[in-house]
Structures are given as structure tokens and as C-alpha cells.
Amino acid sequence: MILPHALTIAGSDSGGGAGIQADLKTFSALGVYGMSAITAVTVQNTTSVLGVQEMPPDIVAGQIDAVFSDIRVDAVKIGMQFSAATIVAVAACLRRWRPSFVVLDPVMISKSGCALMQPEAGIALQRELLPIASLVTPNIPEAEAITGLRIKSHSDMEKAAAVIVALGAKAVLLKGGHSTGNADDLFFDGRDCHWLPGARLAVRNTHGTGCTLSSAIAAFSARGMTLLNACRQAKDYVRSAMTAGLEVGHGCGPLHHFFQWYGGTTSASLADSASGAAARSRSAIAPIEIKDRASKLEKIISALAAIRSEQPLVHHLTNLVTVNDCANAVLAIGGSPIMAPCQREVGDMAGLSRALLLNIGTPDEAAEGAMIAAGQAANAQGIPVVLDPVGVAATPFRRALVEAILNNVDVAIVRGNLAEIKVLADLPARARGVKSAEDIFSGASEADASAGEKLRQACCLVADVSRRYGCVIALTGAQDVLSDGKVTFTMANGHPMLARIMGTGCMASSLCATFAAVLPNGPLLAAAGGITCLSIAGEIAGESLRDGEGTGAFHTRLIDALSLLSPADLQKRLRCSVHIG
Image (cartoon, rainbow, N blue to C red; front, side):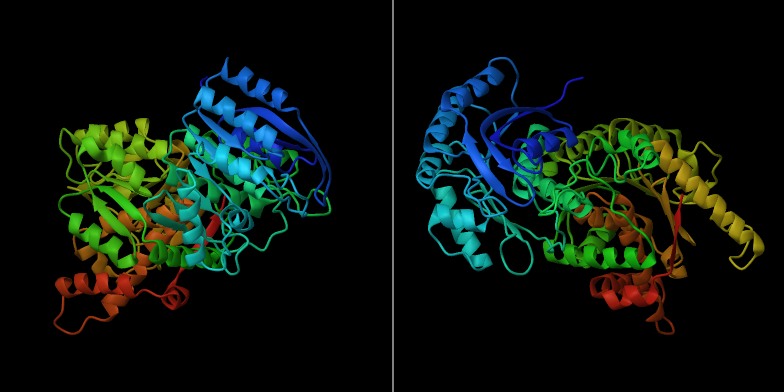
């Protein structure tokens, strides 16, 4: 088995929460083979740093040379550098070996307030290491020390980032954890500023967050992601690890670096996590926990706000019949659609986008290659892929195309009607062209006693298909059923007019992709968010129709309702049930 390789050059934390220990845990958790060169040994635990013993610079250099002379290095993370002499030695090694990616975390002060860099070493860091760095990840106090600026606002952060790039760094991720308000980070590559918003987490497990973030960026870069996407994915990973936490020590607790593998302490929970490890190994991001309706609603509202704030770019290879509907739906909800089906540019688009939609509604001979290339490029960048298998029940050509995509692309969400989902389960399906000729309640009204059994069967079908393909399955119709194989939602929102206009299924898939752009570690919640918003907007649009108005007016008002959808609308109207198991 061949894995990406990453080297960390940093100090050792005897408490295990930061430094080399956090770096190696992060590399392992994210599917990267980790190597280390230890610059200093700290005597510390979760409450304080009690002592520091620097390694001789020639020993530090010897470790680096030993690794590079034998093992391929795809990324380097630089952490604690205690003295100017060590910095000079490390810089000389890296100039000699010329690694392709270097992330510099300019560690100066520990979480407990102990100095981890001698005062005179700061000048050496600027002179020797900044010009080598592909990315520098200072927090606000570190950025103030490097630039000499006071940082109190977003504007101040932008000015400081520009100074750091002017000092030689190719890019900077200025962390906002020490600011007031939200913990918004700023990415600046010398040309464009990108804000990575983040609500402040009320947790005590913050020991090693900076080390973990920079090593996660190194890991994702080693795996081939673009720098901005690597920063986004690393931020998501750190926040999930902070939230999971570990009950260790009496001070600032460590992150739970392996939260995606195990979350409990019993043998049963470990076994359960191990059984799902294969499905999670490629993304290395744990699913968002959804406990009940209130929890689901809260997370959908938060995601909707993130979409409208961040306006994520969603790449579409989509249906020529409904391309305008999909674009307008994404724009209305707050996202930024881009329709780019040419195979020659899909790799570049993956580096710019935050989600990918593959919709096979109007396929041709070139579609398979373009969609697989786009999906694989998205997988390499760590962005979620949503598949809409339009009309897969209609022809063998469409079945072969969907099979090829699922065999070659790591798909996060598949959204389809009942006939389409049945085909994925190798069951007989009735279709009229691209539309399903059956629904969950075919042959029964929702009030009939048999309707409950039909809904139960639909839940079992969707959960089984989810487990089969290792992704979220979203079945939409008179009642929507969504599952990741463990948790299943049933949702009863919507309006009959949604079935009378062209493209609502395609629009639902595009909205699922838009929510996935801001919820890359929560595909089940992303699917629920996209479908819920379309269904509730359909209710609002239908209720606004006047006598004599039909499908044309409904179509226009559906887009209006999406653009005006509010948290109050969701809170008032959401009708769903959550089933575990």
C-alpha cells in the first residue's frame, strides 16, 4: 500500500496533546505516513510547561537528512523552533532538499503561557524560514510579533497577512481564535483574501489546536489538495476533533484526533466504529451527529446561514433541460453555481469549487469520461460529490453510466426517485422515461393502514442501498426518505405542484450539493438541508398562488420562496422523523 508521506520538524510534548505527538496522530488519522525530526523536548502536561531541553542543531539536521535521503517527502510541517541556531540548521536542510510543500507554524507561546521560542529566534525565523514556507499559520499574537502591528479587526488581519507575504511567505492562514467574536480565519495568497468563518466552540479541549491545524494542512496537501481546500478541510477536521474531545488531565484537554474511528470507550463502540472505517477512510472526516428533529433543524439553519455568507462555488455537470433551473435554485439559496461540463477543465474546476454535482439527465458518449474525471478530481481535492441518476431505470446506457461513476468515484450523496433507487438495489422498477411510474404510497393513501408498512419498506430499501454503496441515499417523492445506513430521516414537506413542473428533482440535487459545500463532513444533513429547503419553498410558493395561476406562476414563486426562505419558515414548517438503526 502506498500512502502520502509527511515530515514534521517540531518539539515533543510529554503530555501527548501538542507538538510531534499531535502531528503524528493527525497524519495517521488523515491517511498519511508520518515522520519526525524532534527539535526540543518539553516537560509538560495539560496544565503547564515545566521545562524545555533543546536538541543540538546538528542532531536536528541529522534527523531531517536521514529522512530525506531514504524516504519520499510529500509535505513538511515546521513547528516549535526554540533557538536561532536550530532555525538556521533546519532552513539549510530544507534549502538543500527542496520539498514541494512546507507549512510553517510559528510557535512562540504555549497554551499555558510558557515561551517556546527564544526572543532572538524571531528574527531568524523571518529571515530563514518565511521565504521557504508555502504557507504560514500564525495566530493573532504570533502575527503581531512577526509584523509589529496591532490586530483588533478583520481589516487589521488583512493588513498583517499582506505584511507576512511581503516578508517572503507564499501564503498565510491567519487564525482568528484569539479574536473577539467568531473564530474566523483569513487565507491570503498574495492576490486574494478568503475568509474561513467559524463559530467559536465552547469546549475545554483546545490543547494542540494550532499544531493539529498545520499538520492537517500538510496532510491534505500531501494528498494532492489545493492549498485553499486543504486549509478548509483542516479547519473542519480540527473543529470536529475539538468537539469530540478527550477527558485527559486537569487543564486544557487534548483534541480527539481519531474521532472518526472511535468515539466511545466500550468494546462495542470500538467494534461498531471499526465496521464503518472503510467507508470513512478516504475523507477522514466523521459524520455530524444528528440526535433528533431539533438538532437537525438547528444544523440546517446554521448551514443555510453559512451558504448565504460564504456563497460557495458548486460545480455542475448537469442536465441540459434543467440547467437554468439548477443554476437559479443555487443562486436563490445563496450559493454560486458554475456549469462546466468540458473534460479538459474539470480538474481546474475542482480546485476552485467546494462541491460537485453529477446529473446524467441528458447524457452523451463524452459524459462518462467527463463525469468520472470530474468526480476523481473532486475526490482528490476532498470536496463532496452528489450524483443524480436521472432516468437510470429507462435505458441500459444510463445504467452503465451510473455504474461506471459509482465504481470510479467516491460519491457522498445519491438523490433519486423511487424507480431510480430501486435500480440501484437491483429491483424491478417502473418508469415513464426519466420519471418514476410509482411512489412510496402507490396503491395506498397516506391515511391507510398499509401506508405505514409501505413507508417502513421504503426506509429499509434506502438504508440497504446506502450501506451497499457507502454513501447517503436520498429518495424524494410524496414523502422523502434519506439514510446513511445508520440514521434514516423521513420528511413530509412539499406541495403537489412540485411534481407538475420540470426539474424539481434536479433542483433538489443541486441544493443538496450546495449544502454539502458547507457541510463536507455531514452528507446526510446536507441532503436533508437541500431537500427540506426546496420542499418548504414549494409549500410557500403553492400557498401564494391566486385563482387562475398555474405552473408558470408556481415556478417563478418557487425561486422567490427559496431566495426569501427564513429560519422562521423552517422552524414553523419542518415535518420530519429521525430513525436510528
